Length: 135
Image (cartoon, rainbow, N blue to C red; front, side, top):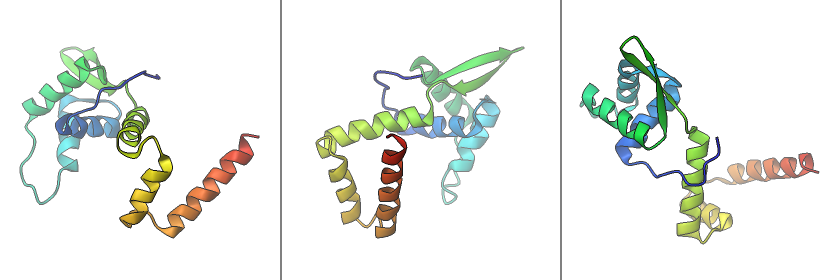
């Protein structure tokens, strides 16, 4: 499902959304478990059930999540894919911070040693292969 503009998520919303993407569909207790499994092991504080459910409801209002009802329990599932969200957020960041230049973004990552020469060679091969396939 392609969207014109996807809203940016808060840190808490993104944390819950990551869990929902990972479980693909799940009841509230499964989502709470997935959220707490992703937390930093050094942080012994578990996210409360009610907190996660509140965030899930906000995600539903924002159009990221929907649910099916079984008896009195809701099973939640994403309606915005992880890839759609990443595409929108990366595009927004590239436009805002790098003047819409992918080259400037990659250069920034190279300067900070986030991308290796091997990564760049692999990307070059992928780009070349994609160009061959698109001919």
